[in-house]
Amino acid sequence: MTLDVRFDCMMPDRCSNGPQSWDGALEWLGADPFSHTAVGKNDHTWNAVNKSDTLDLSTKISAYSPVTNPVASRWETADAQIRCDKISSATPGCAFHKYVPTWVMNFKKTPQAVAHAWLIQSKLSNHPGSRSANKPMFFLPSADKNAPGRDPNKNRDVICPKNSDGTSWASKYGNPRTTAVPEISASDKPSCDEFAYASSYNSGGMPGGVVGGMNPVASGDACVQAYATRVTQGEWRLYDDERLAGPTWNEVCGRSSMSGWINSTSMGGAFSSGFSGKYRLLDKDPYWVSFPEFGHCDASKATVTCTVPKA
Image: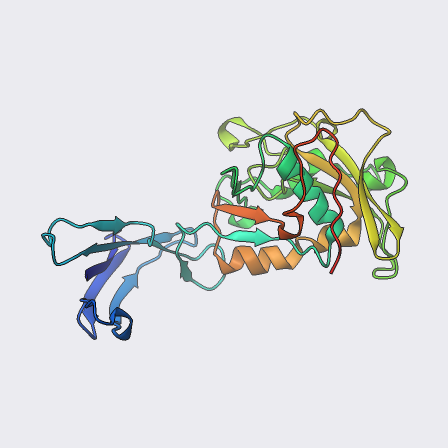
């Protein structure tokens, strides 16, 4: 098989291509194809002007076998495009942006938040972030990195508005059985957790129309309502908030009252500086959200009950 790999800058006003060279033949023989490697090199010069500049190095990989005409490629892909930016990080860098990464929430550390996210993703028809339903989450960056100028905190204020004294909605309106974790954080208080995430176009707080919100609601009151409580040390439950009407499962978002430490820790730096930074996610980039510990659970019934042992 002969491979032909080309890395070409498609924005001549902002970048230039250097010569492309290989240290070995781009031909793999049938006897032992894995014993042969070829390393290629191509230098590009990126003439970025503004912080918002991005660069697309479109990559074309084609292949043909000895029985076909080399001009007639048997296989070709454009999924290996490289995008370089100075937006997602203070340090310029590049990523294979056609790859859709998967964010796995930390069940061992924050089981309550994971249970809430799994329930909403699995049960609602919009399935935010579900790979099996082909419903990706679409990233909304922080205000200083965001093209449309929408601060994710504004989404949060729709679903989880603060009280007049600046405290969390959950401290006044959340279920009184919500459990905090003062043994971990002395100042821990009930907090409002929403899914889909505020930093996404899937958020119920994201306006529709030209802003691009996918599931806009006027208030978090329109979401599925739940709360997290501790039954015994190490055993937590996520319950429907029975003070209110039960869910119809036609909702497009979820709102749950839970520990503030749990809520903030479930995302926090692990997502913002870790996951989104690692994959250099930019405005509207898709990603999946996964909860492998809940793989055995059945969300098809009207009343959802599932037990997940904590490792």
